[in-house]
Image 1 (tube, rainbow, N blue to C red):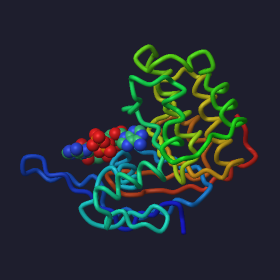
Image 2 (image 1 turned 180 degrees about the vertical axis):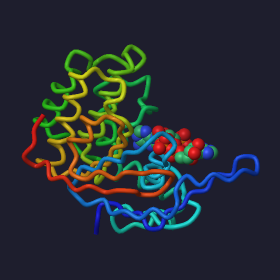
Image 3 (image 1 turned 90 degrees about the horizontal axis):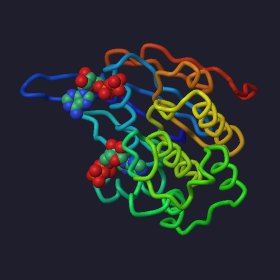
Length: 232
Ligand code: ADP
Ligand code: ADP
């Protein structure tokens, strides 16, 4: 099975009687162990596609799979468990828990799954993301960029089946962005992680091995670019 599949995904929004087709029969395979970029102009359907693939939104028609599971057939409860146990999110709306420390936040998904973090990977992720001196802080004490890096650490550490990232380099300076991209690449190439990233950033896109271009809710181009040998 591919890590995720979209088949004829269509999403129509109805805003006060006006119909907007955000996705128009999009079909796509996300291969396991690949780093995929979803690109395209604003309003082209990138977020809608990612939300449908990640089980955060349901399509009007068509099907989305994570592995062998057809998301469109799941109950809300099973969908919630699916997101919790098998999917990682690096999103602007971070969903960090304000009462927990940084360390507690990034290890929470693993604790919920009854897993222990690999100490070496934990150290590597925390160090590379510049969070070593922030582990006992709580999210409200951090800047937006720091919170973004905590969300990134949480997703990478847990090593879920698939990670969805929404503009993960969006509000980072170029040095922090390069660190995030280096870690995402490492996770894909060394740990066989599958990552799907919505991005506008050409540097970020150049780190991926599969780029999907959307326009007006359809896939207009796909590019396979082996980046196994490319390092930032
Ligand atoms: P992108 O992520 O590429 O900017 P989106 O997926 O956010 O594109 O949006 C695709 C289209 O769907 C746009 O025309 C947008 O206005 C519309 N859209 C997105 N979300 C909603 C919503 N919740 N309600 C109504 N229209 C929406
Ligand atoms: P709620 O119904 O509690 O608001 P949802 O699961 O419907 O939560 O998701 C709402 C938003 O929360 C999503 O758009 C996404 O940005 C974020 N989100 C959902 N699940 C996660 C998760 N596991 N990790 C991080 N962010 C998440």
